[in-house]
Length: 75
Image (cartoon, rainbow, N blue to C red; front, top):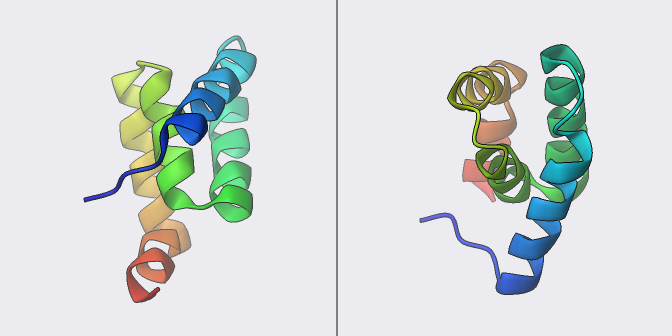
C-alpha cells in the first residue's frame, strides 16, 4: 500500500492546485518531474488530488512506460 504522511499530503494538494490550470500535456510533464524529484508515491498523490481520472490514467501509463514503477518496486 502506498501511503504518505499528512504533511506530504498537504504538500501534494498544494502542488496539484498550482498545476491545475495548465493544459493536460503540461500537467503530465510536471507530474513526471515530481515523480523523478519526490518519488512516484508523492506524484501519484498529486495526480489523485487533481481529481481528473483521464489525467491520472495517462500519468499511470507514462510512469509504466518510463519505467518509474519498476524503479519504485525495486526499492
